[in-house]
Amino acid sequence: MSTLTSLNHCRSMLSIVLWLSIFCFGFTAMSANSQALESTHQAANIKFDASIPEHKKLQLSTWANHARKALRLVYGKLPVEDFITIIKTSNGGTSAVPWGEVNRYSPPEVTLVVNMNSSLEALKADWTIYHEFSHLLIPYDAADARWFSEGLASYYQNIIQARAGMFDEQTLWQKLYDGFERGNKQQNYAHQKLNYLSDHISENRNYMRIYWSGALYWLNADIALRTLATNTAKPYSLDAALEQLQACCFNGYLSANEIVQKLDELSESKIFTTLFSEFSKSYAIPDYVTPLNSLGVEVINGHVTLNNHAKLSSHRRAIYIGSSKPSDKYSD
Image (cartoon, rainbow, N blue to C red; front, side, top):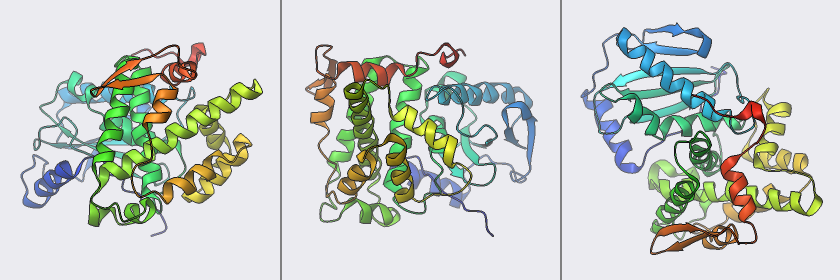
């Protein structure tokens, strides 16, 4: 089969073990004909598992459309307009959305397994859908450098939620800091470089170091691009670079190396390839305190405060707000 598929798992090791037990031992509420999907919301390309009752479909459509609007806040439009959201059901687990994955078909499919007892508020508050949708920001099939694609999704899952008004600026940076801390705590494979660790993620299960090293890569790139723009008086950012990448290069699959080379070409810099080399060879999550402090993100006893007098505090605010174009404003 020529279609390439990427599985972008979205939970910690505990959640993955939980889901595998649910899947393998049958403690789910999926119907016997769960493979039969019906579409009742073609405008938003949503397909529902046949077991989902009619009264839940409006709630699930509202949730999926909320996340689609949030994704538009990266650069004003969806990276892939016709991607399909497939919603399946489970009553297992404690989270609202215990599982998600992206399949790079044409058009791409984002599959989400939803706990049917969850309210709309609980669904919106769960980070999984924002993470999975953010994978679509690069034309990538996750065949190599898993840390690279998972890092992008981990970075933007928080940013698009904040831009959609789901939490404030301080909470955004608290969530990012907490993620970096989780990555820093995984030291049991400190003898292995990130690229090797990432390629063997199913064996070592160092999800936090892998995902959050990747998120830090994209944060560092974002800071560097915004600083470069400040020095040249030409507005630029990671948002803008990804928009350019979408315009030029979404007709096929690219490896991580090809993506960073293209992003360097588009940004007229060496930012992406230089950082890619540094992070690939890292034996632990790189320093995250220094870049956070440069943005005015200060931490005391694990609690984030914001310093608006820091040298790059304007970059921090811009990352939170995103584009100021009227067409990019969020409305639910």
